[in-house]
Amino acid sequence: MLETEDMPLTTGACPIFIGWDVGGWNCDKNPASRDALVVIDSQRQIQGKPWRGNLRRCINQSGNTSEFIAKLLELCELDSTGFIDTPVVLAIDTPLGFSGAFIDLIMQGRATGPIENSSSNPYLFRHTERFLFERGLSPLSAVKDMIGSQATKGMHVLARFAPYIERCGVWTDNQHLRVIEAYPASGKRSTVMRDLLQFYGRPPHLGHVDQWDALACALIAWIFHLHPELLAKPCADAPKREGWIFVPADGLAAQSE
Image (cartoon, rainbow, N blue to C red; front, side, top):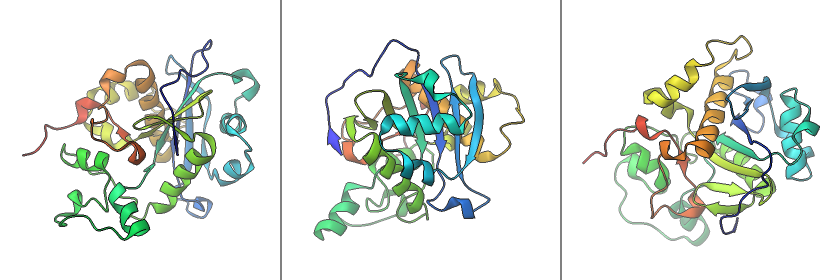
């Protein structure tokens, strides 16, 4: 990934917010877990129709960032021509990096210090995931929890369509798109997320848990853009290239001793 200074995206139009709950590369063969997309506007209204399927073909057929965004919108039955140059914040529910210790181990054969319990193992969990474990959440590991397919799918999208690191946990194409990592399950203890989700009731077009997770991701993207003070911010020592999981701060427990 390339690093860049903070740069404002194209302005002039209200952003749209896309939530992507990630399925594996071949999730069309898995009826229980597939890619899901939900698009909301700045008023949190769902735009178009939530979608569920496999994004692999969409990713493969997109030649650039604009084409990728257009295809996401079209899958949600939106006319992408109405969103040309519209800023987009995309929140993705999958690990968007591996830990530095894990990369050093496989690339350079460099071992880290003593390994104790699973949740503090720096090969298995990034800094951001260890931060969440200390505060009562249980994020999955791209290394040990059989979500490597989803993680590489998300990271592949970053490398192709949002290759610049703006700051820790924020990727961009330096034009229209910002990408962050979200964690829908973190909202279960969050009053902020509970209140936001109650706005939607039980709409019939959100018929699968994957789509509800995509909606939660879209709402985290909305909070990130409009109310960033409500999210837990990256620690000063969080490695940029590992990324950061943005979660509502009010859903975190006090740090355990």
